[in-house]
Length: 588
Ligand code: NDP
Image 1 (cartoon, rainbow, N blue to C red):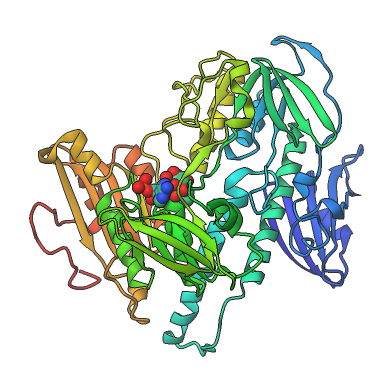
Image 2: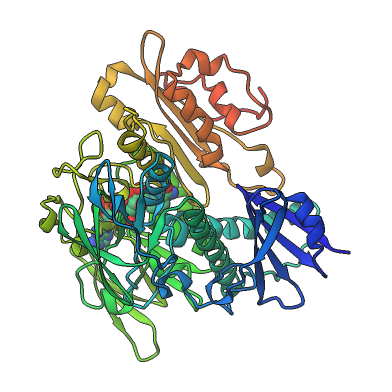
């Protein structure tokens, strides 16, 4: 009499039950070593964990490993400490045996500092290639006290919560569109911030938990401590229980970065960053978002979609480093949705008024004119700095550059046994998939006999603004810089997504372009797309571009109709021709 919905994440299964759980059925179903978690609807705050293991006879047996103080996840958040990971010293309290390995007398072959995307990928891959590995991870709380568990920025305060809040905002839009499609929708619907935050945080805690189980399964020793170098083979980890000295043949620094605060009065006291936003215990309300990079635009976008009033303060240009025509279209599409942009403006100070509102004084950098306004929240999205300060890198002889570490094409620092990977390295894209692949390849080179190096070129990415922007390869300006204006042809077009017609959504900024070689095979240098599900559209084209995509191949590829991705196969108008790139109909 139990109903199950079963989701497998690799070998993990989470089973939501109503009524009693028929363990025998489950035991028959899952024979691999699996973690099963049962959400008991009768006691929604209690989650029972079972480890499914094969016994000596080869039969599966379940071990109750319930640890309510250590579990996040749906229904368990209230029972668990707010940040279970940070409240524990280590997951496995054993000291490693000091063994003589072929690589020397060290506690470990490899110590990875940082349990984010890069560090975890590197640590797990190294173990799989036979290394003895420990991974240090420690999260310093933000000025307002926000902290989180293992998994790094992406999982806890970056890509994952951002995508979930973006989705929440898109759903709000979709609910309103649904009425045009014939759904009877209550027009008083509104979002519940605290419920959204709690759903997002519960998901994050479940990811934290699965990450820790994964580390245990893969035999990576996880140490919840802040590491600093003593010398090039020795580190001291500050644990809750005291200091612990750790030695390793090799270190990989994967500590990532944290948001910067501007150097103005009131910035730290009254402002928050993306490290705080996704767990904010009150509605953000009228929000000043300072910074027009990825983070600023994405946060402003979902805040608007959730019914708040964001304003974006732009110091110079929008989305520095991106194709500027596309960046301006992104900004215009946000402006069209009612998100104002304060251009060429910098903040001067933040003070708290008696009514609790934040008074922000600012200045136009061109005219020198000063202004002020009050906000409920000020969100700094002014860039990120590498977390080098606590590492005592000088003790190991590692040099830094602008809060980051410079590495060669093998991610090696200037010290032979110390490498760096992920957001901490200088001059490379700060993106999770880049960090994961670079970390994995580094471990394979260190322990798996591989020679493969990370290719940091042509990395696709998406800015999850309300109308999403994704791209891969060169911007138009970089293509012109590299190949000359006469060597570049730009194919472009506006398009009308079929699903936009019925709710009469604006198609004004649905636009895409292919930046290509002008002659010969017309090799594609870059693809840019502004529209729905941009990341899903560009991901496949990214593989094509890396494989040498040409305009000829693109326009001879049969599209999937009616999709927006097919618009890339219909590109026929060049900028140079001066012809109108606006489509007459959707199907010709
Ligand atoms: P960015 O460096 O991209 O942008 C920072 C913004 O803040 C710029 O607009 C900058 O202006 C402005 N700024 C800097 N200092 C000040 C100041 N003192 N006063 C006012 N404005 C200022 O940083 P983000 O924090 O947005 O993103 C960091 C990284 O995170 C990115 O490189 C990105 O790779 C990654 N990321 C990726 C995401 C994704 O893949 N979807 C999502 C979010 C982040 P100016 O141009 O004048 O310097």
